[in-house]
Amino acid sequence: MGPAIAKDFDWRDGRVETRLNGSVVQSGGFTELFFDPPAILSFVSRYVTLLPGDVIYTGTPGTTGELKPGDLVEVEIPGIGVLSNTVAALT
Image 1: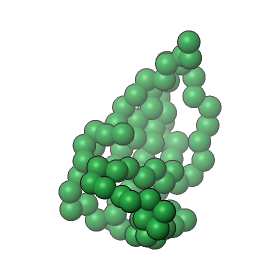
Image 2 (image 1 turned 60 degrees about the vertical axis):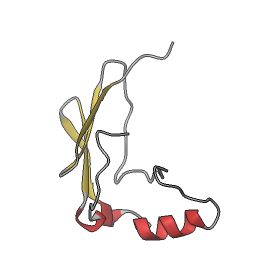
Image 3 (image 1 turned 135 degrees about the horizontal axis):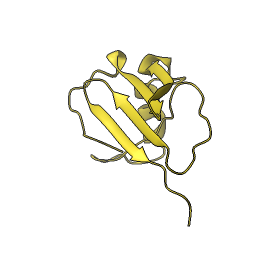
Image 4 (image 1 turned 90 degrees about the vertical axis):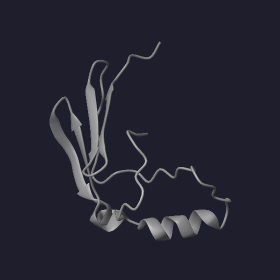
């Protein structure tokens, strides 16, 4: 999670792009989610008390592939930033 928490971010204009070793493997808008963020929050809040700082993972548009140790994965949300991680081997 990261690289920042954004305030006043309009999810309807949001996009997410995932790159694997520099190649785009996922790209899409938040409006492509099966359920939009307000619907997700409404559903979750029926069963869990949400507090500031809580995180709800929603998944991403598109499909994913296999990751190997040493792969570089970058996830970018324009206007927020890029989260970059290198895949480590399981020990």
